Image 1 (cartoon, rainbow, N blue to C red):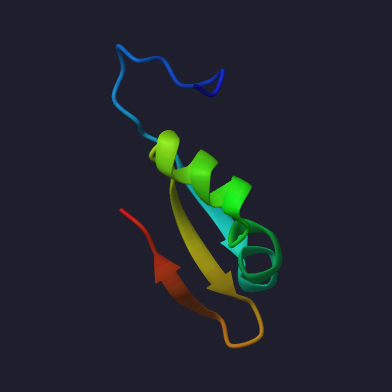
Image 2: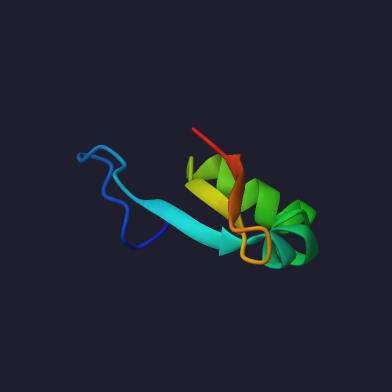
Length: 57
C-alpha cells in the first residue's frame, strides 16, 4: 500500500501525467501492477494537442 493511502479513507487523488510518460513508463508491468493494486486514478494529457487522451476510474 502506498504511504499516502489510508485504508479507512476513500481514495480521492487523481494523478495527471503526460502522454509521453504514460507511454514510456506507466505501461510497464511493474507500474501497471502498482496502479491496479492501489487503484490509482489518473488523467493522461497530450500537451501539444491540448487534450485529455485517457481518463481512468
